Length: 220
Length: 220
DNA sequence: ATTTGAATTTAGCCTTGTCTAAATATTAAT
DNA sequence: ATTAATATTTAGACAAGGCTAAATTCAAAT
Ligand SMILES: [Mn+2]
Ligand SMILES: [Mn+2]
Ligand SMILES: [Mn+2]
Ligand SMILES: [Mn+2]
Image (cartoon, rainbow over all chains, first blue to last red; front, top):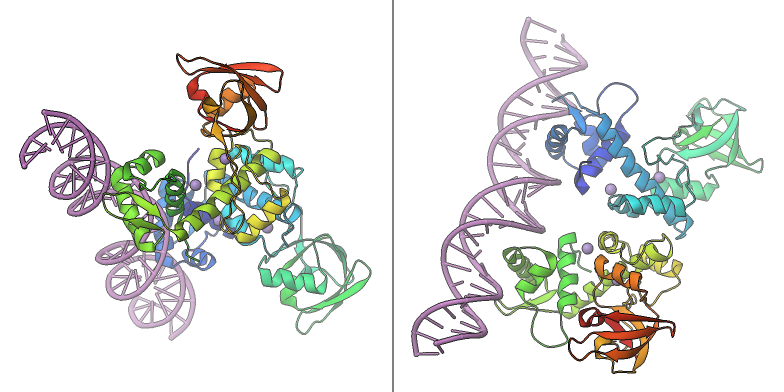
């Protein structure tokens, strides 16, 4: 197994996350924006990662992650998400506080540590944001989910994840009372601006913009 | 509060650990040996750390850690030892397995993380090797302790710590049945080579060399 | 088919942290 | 007080990872 640096791991994870099911490669500019680094720095690193075989790099055409790269990305994501669970479940962090710390912890090298942590947490399948935790072979249990703004009028389902994990967005959800696991029903759709109103747990209604709804993922 | 890199933190911790109560400074060569780096690399870093004010550096005369340096060293040591407790108490690591992992975890930056971890562990005062855990202000509860080879014949006490935390030594202690907290009595001292025999918990006798005994710390 | 603007890469520079080889300072031994 | 041995520092090189400015390529629009 190849060893990767901190910086390389962050690139690999970002590239994997930006990879769309579609076949177009991930662009230098997108990586630059996601990581808040200059495009020139990204170009340089892509060349190196290409040489190491974790991505297929064709100049000017964006990158595709290789099988080996995907494997490594998933192992980092597994660590990140397990640590997020730990922080929330054991150390009483809120779901908007975990990102920075998990972003450091995910680079700690020790397979036994992660196996034990997994066991200690009771083999969780999803992190605090509803994202699936890959197993140690990199297998992910995917569940079909669609953005809330695409749920039809009177359609119902369950909030299973959020697309945007920024602290601001998560705190907003806390404030209005939306949470992972909530059962929802769309009771109004405003054609004009795409905003909607939902009923949560048959108790409470929430009105939200299309933008917010687009970042909430529903399992129908 | 100053921010230090991974490498700088490792130097600071090592210098603090090598600092003897005596007034002679810590030598370049000692640091080089302890960290497995070349003396030339150490010299260079000492210059930088001197400029940053964490050590007093006089060329050719070794370094003394400053108050600020000591403060930072203790915060790293606090993190290291809390993580060691976590690994042993919660993740079932043995005391000889924790060093490498804790050596990475100690650099994770988040004061709330450490405060919560401390609380979660029940505010432990000692790590798995018997070393005291500094509080968040850097205060350490010291307890007087002497090497087992200096305990007089028929003297008794309790094993409270080990000086050498290498995996080999710790596994040896496990094998012969010595552990932190054991009540011991010295029942024989061989003048010739300094080896001794002790009675553990009034049940079992262990014969050990002077070298081994010198690495076991006793509170009388 | 050109032109042109945005995206991307290259070139050159900087910092951090390591190394080896050479120079120099300190200490110990005559 | 010299000299020899040891410890330490300096000089110069390299790799990783970042940046700015300049050059180049691609693609979209005439
Ligand atoms: Mn990260
Ligand atoms: Mn997450
Ligand atoms: Mn360390
Ligand atoms: Mn310890």
